[in-house]
Image: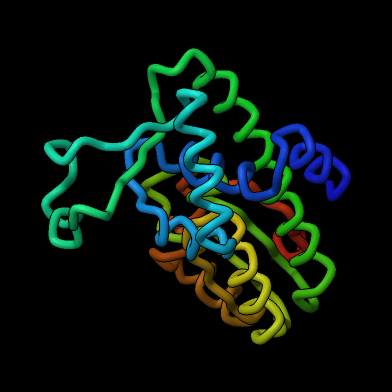
Length: 207
């Protein structure tokens, strides 16, 4: 996975450009300003501004006119503050969107691999929500077993920064999971009713 991501960074010319494209294509209906983008991708503002200029010249993003800025954004608006947005009518939009989807899959797989190896004694590991494009899911991740809380928290924070969106996760002991499953717990029921993917399951066969 690292090799594929490294190749993509070189393909796009820079790590900064790739990260910016991810932000814009993961959030095609949202406006961003320079400092916000620099904070989101943890890159120096000058480097972000250079790549914003390059992407604008390429017709991939555009500066949002004041009349298209939301009321919340207008509260922060000054003459110097410029908002940018992905240009959905760009000839490259569909092709770049497909590439960004592949980048997201790579990053999600990195997270899955790290959690599987480092999170502790996993009895069940389930993905939903942002990982399965189910907006009605109550969580994005369910972890059952003897989980290392500090480790999982650090891994989640790391990948929230990479993926530019929060990850909602729930941790349960195996006993708690079994008890809640036995009584038909509504929270668990909603998780399994949502579109989900089971990565690890060492419990179901023993229920």
